[in-house]
Length: 95
Image (cartoon, rainbow, N blue to C red; front, side, top):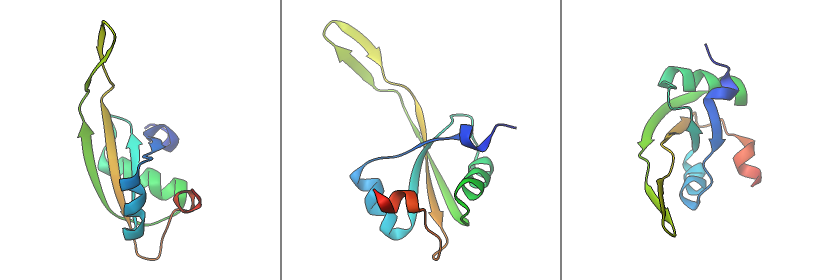
């Protein structure tokens, strides 16, 4: 069983994700092998909140180009976590 901090890689930093904080939804990039129950347990233990719902989005690798070099960006998995009404994550509020 992986460590909780290995499952949650980083918060998603974008205008759309910070706008969703008003609706008590928080976005995180997670490990590609993580499942919904694992993500739920990790969020609850790391941030000491109650998770109500989790949505998972698998992001495909996009083609990238720099001059004549052609490559691809990394695949990612994004989790959108909805918390109970009275819970919040202060990490997102301070930024």
